[in-house]
Length: 564
Image (tube, rainbow, N blue to C red; front, side, top):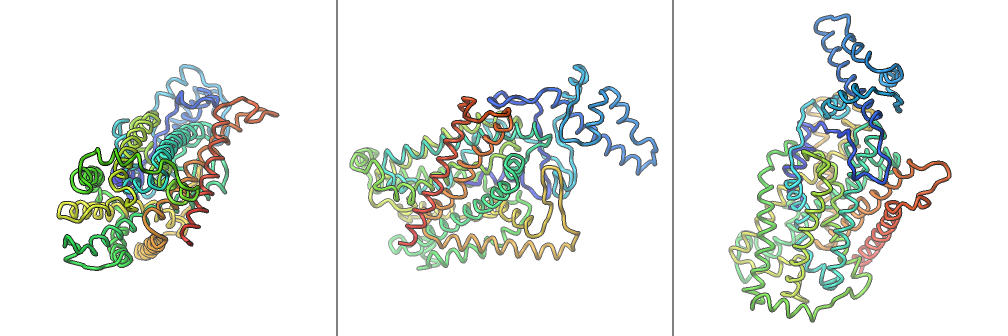
């Protein structure tokens, strides 16, 4: 559901371990990158020229090994003759700064060269140099991003609005959606600026943090991304356990789960789920799970529509008027700061703070410069739908609104089928979401294919059996960690903690910090970010401050609520 995006268009295009994306690098900066100064056209042309020369040099080295061609650099030398001495020296010495002057006609020829990155084993690929071009249009990207946001967390929103109040919940959702949109766009712009200024295409969140903020920040993003991956998977376990437990203990409808496995607790259902999820998480070819993209869309939309229809015609019945009339008697604002942050706001972040998907989304697009528009369209649409759904559902069930609103529905044959469909979808979604965390752990513990901005590290080749056993142990540890996190509390508590801490930091603290670091690099001696009168920098400082307050408050009040 949340990861339907990851299932096909994102993970299958950007994170498949057997066939790896060679990311495209757009040379011409987007106009959306202001207020930062744009890199000069000569600088970009020289960068493009260097990359082209490296590719040609490698090609000729291969020809030499096959044909014993002693003049392996003839083609490169003839190409370099059209560029002045300074440019040639900076290219061949692989310096970090290019001060070349490129003639207009030559520069135009260089910029017309393809934008694909050079495929280097151990640098920008995993095992082989297979290329998957970005294929998604802006509309497709908006649709997939909407699927990513509108997932299991949507069914917790009615209870969130119960905690936040009708007006308070609406304000919180709009605020979180707007700020998430702002920071996702900021990450995309920072990616372009950092790529142009560092002579290296930025292909991951960790790499962007390393280039702009240093190694410690990169390690923090590394840990937070791992935490977000494991945390989201733990919410899936809680969802599965709570849903199946409610069906198993239902003595009124005698649904299929009750008939097959009566009176099975949430804990035991989660144990059963882990026994199924472990072998699924060992699968490394994610194309097997591609069918769940359509399944997830159907399950989420079906769940939302069914919940509303059930409230209109069954319980409480009486049409939408019942909900509208009840809304006026509900609390409009949160009863306390603890309720606002410890009980709910992190769950809204869990929905919208999907900034860690920025890079795979951009890399899957046909035209990455359309990313900002796709984000605005997706977040706006999902925000409107989720707000309406939460308010109407809260009006139906009022003080009886459950942590997951699906628990307010009975377990008749059709509703049982829908709930089981959601469970099945999450069982096949779990391995894809876990894949990013699993790969992070594998890289950290085994040292496989660790990549930095300009280097690659790898361990000595080992037998495939030994490597498979090590991966199996790592996957077991990752699944076990998600199970342990699932024991923290109900879906709302776990989602609130994950969304307000790991995802909140990645969404509301790191993007403005990266943006400020890039803006700082453009300052002259004696200048400060605020002395420029730069609105963007002022907004970034305010946003980072908000992020620190949010993460601190959610962490404190959520932990406090768990200890009561």
